[in-house]
Length: 374
Image 1 (cartoon, rainbow, N blue to C red):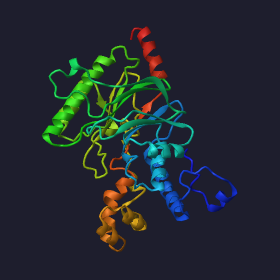
Image 2: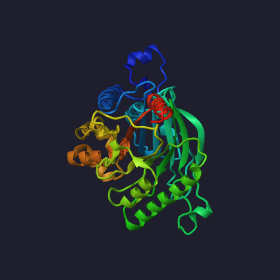
Image 3: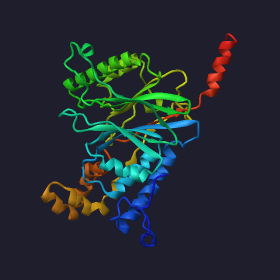
Image 4: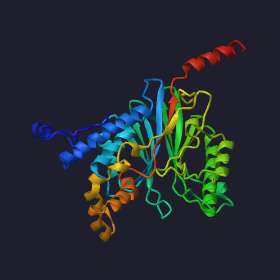
């Protein structure tokens, strides 16, 4: 459970020197944040399955827009981000910038049970000064000890114009209950032009070839490709088909899911290559459990724009519009929807799946059947 020390009445701070992340939050800001958190809690509690000790693991992925770079996030936004992360056990995060200030703020809110593992930024213009991370609950999952950058080699890239992925992915191993698995956190080349589709397809082709070589002798059969893959519905069908032909399959609960906040594309994906004992929980509709969480249904909702006029005016990069915004409802409403609230949270929704962590009954049953010659 996150720490809410900032969100106390003034009397508490007089009585005791609580460790605070944002000591300058005003009473009005604290009240607004509490109201938003209460709505978020209700939404997460309704849409995301609960944790079940030694039974399930909640794995998520989230591209948090320019995390560590925008400079516009209000203190309440960090609390909302932390609250969402806390609903899961292991989260692959993309678009963390060179500074870790934002991530460290969220970790302070999440509390002592949480850790992160972050890679280095990818140098050069293509890397966009970005890195990826895993944020995880140490009471639910632990690192296996496997971690390393996936780099391409000359023999593999012979005949290809691409010599390395634009943002170097890392493979990282995790343990949870009976489960051993490795995740590869990806942020692939964006764009829907013909050249973009071809480049992204080549990134996937080379990645799959590299993983096929590395899988030999790997300590687990279970591999998860996860992240902002920038896959366009329909346009990237050939690339998705290549993934599936290589044994990497979608979770049923995420097939066809729209993951950007405009609900036009399914950029964020998870593909699983797994053994018989790496299973998804089945939901009430007997579908593999997974989904997308729309945080704008609970915080920074369409009708919530008016109280943020002053903050939006301070953030607007156009001086004329910034001066007009406090008195112009249409301008304020439009700017709130795009890009201001996206800069507070993200332009991507988090995606999640629910995994079974105790397959002991199936394991024993299969062994018994084999011994009986069934």
